[in-house]
Length: 277
Figure 1: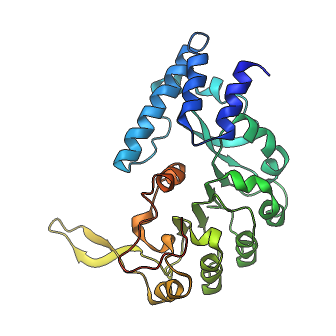
Figure 2 (figure 1 turned 90 degrees about the horizontal axis):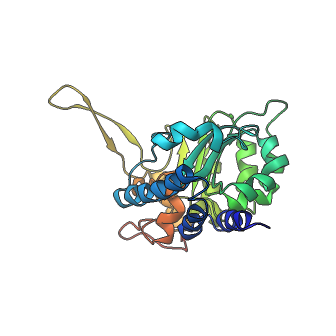
């Protein structure tokens, strides 16, 4: 194994560590100076973003605009879209069947921590295979935004034994019912999620809604609701549930960092703590 390959393996086997990324940048500083500068600069930008609890800016780096095709060439045949963070591709949009077939190779070559699933090009969504795949153990964030999962498919996902790292789950247009919220709260792995994204007016956590009031300029005023009675009942049974509280909203690519720093999940006054870390 070459030194280049050893350094890349160090990155993909410890995706949270910036030291390995900086060592890789130093190694290629002569042969690929723009790539090295990009890695170093994105790491600095991530530090600033996290300190400010800011958003990930996609594709705004001049070096990425100049070299995007070159630096994403290897992944372009597998993924439809991708996002660079801290110098490397960390989030991809992919057909679930391609992830199942090529996931091990992808994770050997890219420190991917976030998956945006799209509808399969052929056949139904392979939820049984996805839920049973050890590949899920590598991901902080899963997004099913436009997949249209059924309640049974969500329940199958929640039963997965590979969600220990998961901190962000976007179920998009899926059909949600009270039993699914119960299942998400009952499973220790999904209970600790920081951010649960659903399109459901009966979501039991805090929601950002129109208050029915306008400001002095005539604009609608929005505010966070309280946790609903149903949400409070879930916490009475299972302890503090981070995804019910807006204070835990976080960028998918930063979720594990905030947990590692002890910043999230925020503990509400008087809430129970049943091991949400």
